Image (cartoon, rainbow, N blue to C red; front, side, top):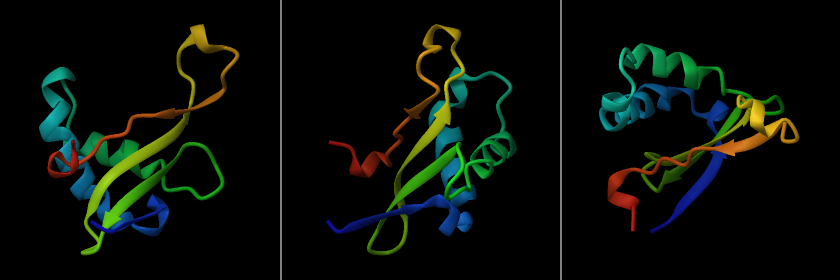
Amino acid sequence: MNYHIDYLANHPNQINNISEILFNEWSHLMPGITIQLFNSIIAKRLNFDTIPLSLIALNDKNEWIGIVSITRASCKKTLFISNFCKKLPLMRSYRI
């Protein structure tokens, strides 16, 4: 399996695909969440040199297989950490 990693900002057309899959997998744990809200959250990460930003893994067909985001800490218990890697969702078919 070949894949490449790139900034999500280079692939904004993937936002709807990512949102749909994340919604289908996680919405049962997040009452009130919508695909549109996922779209909005992910769109804020279309950055190259500003946090938050996301990196996306794409297969040979240019389909997303994973995404990782770097965000600012939102938990007061992590005052000494201002930025951190958050979430690493993978398509089910690529999980071990």
